[in-house]
Image (cartoon, rainbow, N blue to C red; front, side, top):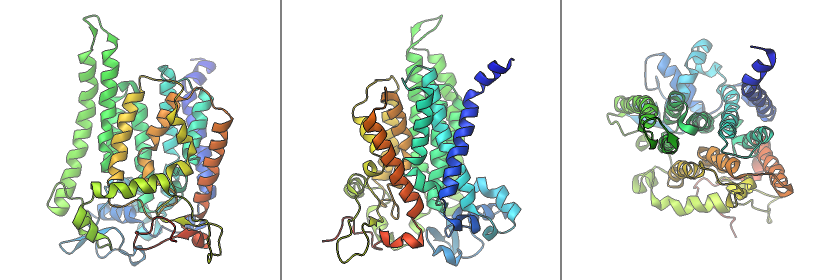
Amino acid sequence: MSRPEWKTKYRNHWLAAILYLFVTFVFAACASPSLWQSHTQHNHFAWLADAFIHGRLSLEGRPPAYAGGNDFALFEHRWYVVFPPVPALLLVPLVALCKHVDAFRDGVFFLFCAGLAPVGLFLAFQRMRQLGLTLMSERMALVFSGLFALGTVYFFTAVQGTVWFAAHIVATSATTFFLAASIGARQPILAGLALCAVLGTRTNLGLMGIFFVLESIRVARNRDTSESKGWDWRFIITRNAPFFLICGCAMTALLLYNRVRFHNSFEVGYRYLQIAWQGRIEKWGMFSYHYLARNLGILLTGLPYMGAPPRSVLFQINGHGLAIWFTTPLYFWLLWPRHRSPLHVNCYIALVLAAVPSLLYQNSGWIQFGQRFSNDYSPWLFALLALGIERTGRLFKVAACWSVAINLLGALTFQRHEWSRYYFIEASQKVIYEPD
């Protein structure tokens, strides 16, 4: 293979590597110094990894005092990490090398993982371009991937490292690779493995797996075969069989994991949390229509408190977070796509299935700078942006600059002691709008 041919063949890999290095450098530069100096205060996944290393599913004793008992489940006199295990499995070899959990800097690990999500999104954009599904150029694909990393709440998420944000990093990264592998149903094994990682990190996102099935149907419906014209059923079966086999194994493993811990395959442990708002979970459940109005209100109308007296600061951000359009006004361009793609409908279906669980969830995402649960479906929003965009005008560029600037503010100030006065945190979680 000649040098020009080699460069062409591996061009996507080189561009993806450059993108990863760039966004990771920015994340590292914006991270708190404490992230590099010690483990995070909520290093649940490291403790779960340590339990796996020692052949247990529960902690050896009580949770560490510095974690404040936050999101540990007590069942039959044993303490468990309630979160699904995939991020902990990633940490097993590193925690083993460190000998002790407190010696492992979990936040640094997840910061370096954070660059994978924009890389997966870039590969998805390139796949769309290759199949003629979008009008965006290669340069736009790189820019949009960078905007996803730095112009959405993914930015402040990437530099936290604590358990809730670490789960978003792993799940969002897996989602983007699932998207890239599923376009045209070209890579069923990779799509299945990526969805397994999603299921094992944020199980509520599993329904978006329908995207691969819909893509196989879309492609098969338009294929001409030597036997018939129209539907290619062999294509549908041969693509979906390995995909469902891999996902089925992952779901079976998760159900067994729950059963061994809590004697119930469908119990993940949230019933046994020792938290202040356990009462509302027992009354309304983990997911309920009861929470929808509150979550929609926060998602769409959360704005800064503008420093009314007697406050001594110009603004404050409620712990429920800023509205999604305020942190990423680029999403307004979804309302008037200039180009219609055959992929649009399938992406919208995946978007809805990924978004609905968080809208019905008992927690708004508190405490947060912006809507951290939007990480669950932001790859689909950006996929739809890429499908509908034709060119970027001046107003779009202004919105892009605002998106990066406001999310940079979040990355530099959220959970930083010196900026705490700029955040309004009310422990009952009942104060959503600025008090009179």
